[in-house]
Length: 271
Image 1 (spheres, helix red, strand yellow):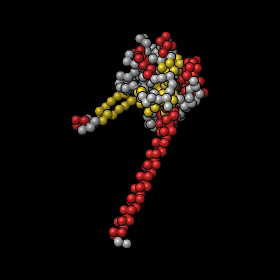
Image 2: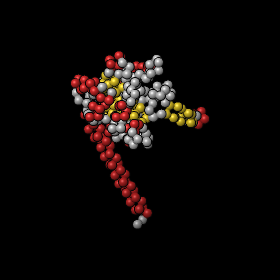
Image 3: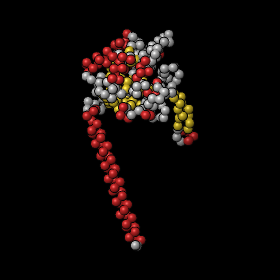
Image 4: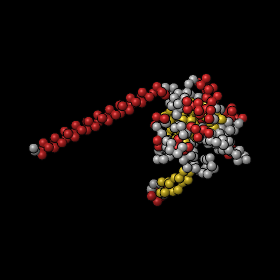
């Protein structure tokens, strides 16, 4: 066979492969588009507004043990190298973050192992601000869940149920964490509520305070029951007061480090 014939044959083969790859890419894009379209009914109530439910995480953000949750060390200097880079050290359970089942169980699901479908959820918000005004350690109980259902309808399976205690207004003050005499004081979930939500097959709970349990909890009953049962939690959720009681969708940008008991997360809501 002549060289020219070989060249032409190679060209034809390459063009055929290129068309094949382009066709496969188009098919994949179409499949993704179809998937997105099919997902629209689940978010039909959304107007398209995105609310950031994540606090800026820095050395001053309050933590449960009072120790700064993050530290920065310069790894590359811009003036010397033309680009810059930080080495960051942080505690998993600081800032707006996730509690994975592994946090309170020896061999539970790590944050890296959370099923992706549990990280995009219908969002239900239960308001206990009136209760929290009278009691800094107020708990969201089963009766609050039942009152929400009576007013708003059933809580969907796979939902994330968030507590709005109004505590976000205190985040810049010592009162977000404790009383003037140093005692923990902030609202949280009661076990009666989380037991009921587990029966409803809710995927996650979220608090707008430092913990899933109230500040005066002596036994961490919610941590010890909710997390080992395979569910996850979110702590320090921001801007909860901007959310509707129902109709929003939450997107949980969970970290994915091996053996993680949790970690800081970027969390958004589409309303």
